[in-house]
Length: 245
Ligand SMILES: Nc1ncnc2c1ncn2[C@@H]1O[C@H](COP(=O)(O)OP(=O)(O)OP(=O)(O)O)[C@@H](O)[C@H]1O
Picture 1 (cartoon, protein in one colour):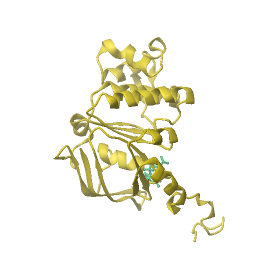
Picture 2 (spheres, rainbow, N blue to C red; picture 1 turned 90 degrees about the vertical axis):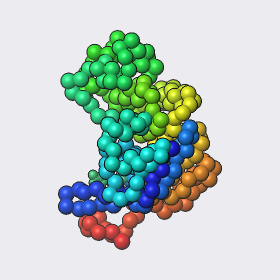
Picture 3 (cartoon, helix red, strand yellow; picture 1 turned 90 degrees about the horizontal axis):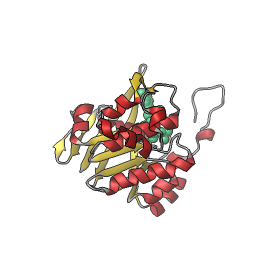
Picture 4 (cartoon, rainbow, N blue to C red; picture 1 turned 135 degrees about the horizontal axis):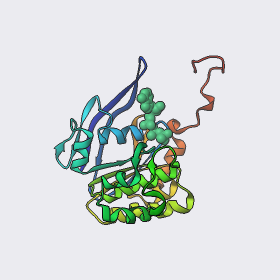
């Protein structure tokens, strides 16, 4: 359903150019539940943003259901059925939560959408989507908007981030139920073992490259051995110098 062919991404920070993704070749199958994991900074969010069209890849092609979507905008990709739930959902000062929800669903279902993610409609519908919402509240509201619309591919970027442990299992159940309705491919970017254990397949992304893919039993031991997933405190150099090694 989605095929990435030799995808590269560079990003500029000031005058410096950084290679973020390198020669990504990846095929996702219809109706499968994937976990995308790997070390911090490995490129998971960047890959999700390339698929959603938020970042434009420098080289390579993206094929979705047989159609070349490489040059489609974010809106056009949303229209063909690709959805992305951000790691840090954007805030919209001046916009009420009910207006954000109305983008995905009709007025009659707004209350049910909020209840489904464990928020009381009376407390939230008229609040603004601004910085006054906690990180976990904003994650739930965004999940509600994503799950309210039909998608063929949904990428959830660290749905566990900022969500309390009591609620996370319920949110995960919502994601699973949406997946089980069928005709949808789910990709959950995660560091959470519980999510890894539910996935049909785990994809390990490290250093901007697909390092491995397979079952939890195959991937978890590899992460412990992969030098790119190591703790970098001993990178050489001394604390008064910039250069290491
Ligand atoms: N605008 C940018 N300019 C330069 N480097 C960037 C930019 N945006 C991201 N990066 C770098 O790209 C790399 C990949 O970042 P990304 O957020 O995709 O990683 P990640 O695997 O999602 O990490 P995490 O597990 O911490 O969420 C990181 O080293 C990050 O510092």
